[in-house]
Amino acid sequence: MARLDNKVALITGGESGIGLATARAFAAEGARVRLAGLAADRLEVAGPSSARRRPASASPTSRWGTRWRRPRARPRQRFGGLDILFSNVGISGDIAPLTAYPADVFRRVLDVHVLGAFFLLKHGLPGLCEGGSVIINSSVVGLTSDAGICAYATAKHAQVG
Image (tube, rainbow, N blue to C red; front, side, top):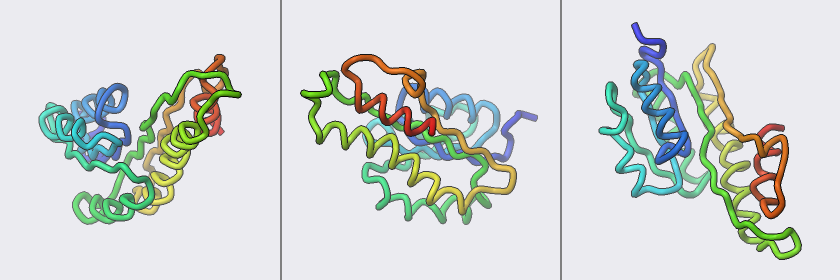
C-alpha cells in the first residue's frame, strides 16, 4: 500500500517545477491529483500522462477567485473531498531597485502568491476532509531577501506569515 492511496490532492502551480514534481510524487504514492495553475497550455501537457501511476487531471485557472468557485464542489462529489491542499503557484516578477519597481508587476506578484494562497484556502478548506493537510510553499526568501526582488520577497514573507 502506497502512503497516499485513496488521497485526493489539489496542487496549484502544477504545470511545472516543484508543483509538477510534487504531483508526480503524490501520484506515485497513490494519490489522485488535481492540478491548477496560470498556464493552461502547460497544464494540458502536465495533465493525465505526467502523473505516471494515477492520472492527474489538469484544471487550468488564470483568474484567482473567479474560477475557484467552480472546481470546489467537484472534488467532493467525485472523490468525497480533498485530503491535501498544496499552494505552490508563483511568479518571480521583475528584478529592479525598489524606487524603479513597476507597481503593476508588484501587484501581480502579490496577487499570484498571496491571493492565490488565500483563495485556495478560502474555497478549498470547506472541501478538506478531516485530518487533511494544507501546505503553503514559500522559499528561503520568505525569511530573507536580496536587492531587486521586493515583490517576490514581500509575497514570500506574506506566505510565511
